[in-house]
Length: 124
Figure: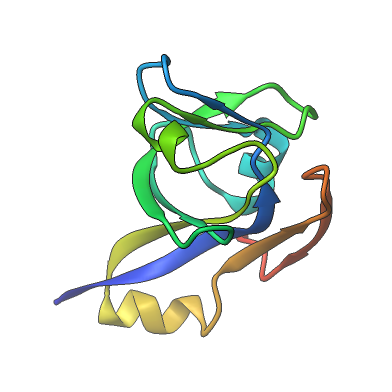
């Protein structure tokens, strides 16, 4: 049996841009990706804390150290520069593997400029 579990999340990132005319996806600073274990092309859910919208899309790697979190394409209608969001990824694993993973996902905490302030439960 496979179950879906939260692998990692970026907690309270600040949206730095919204580009309606881009093909689609979310652009995320490479430093945030490394710290969280998230990968380009990986599917993520983005929850907008400013208006409650939830959106699912894939990751595009952003510039290293720029703090980019840019919603591209249709979600640009629901996420605006300055909004706070949580970006999280789930994976399907066996129940046994989920038990080995522990009780908490990797959580990357950031400041208002999307600079990493701490990482809880970093992936090995």
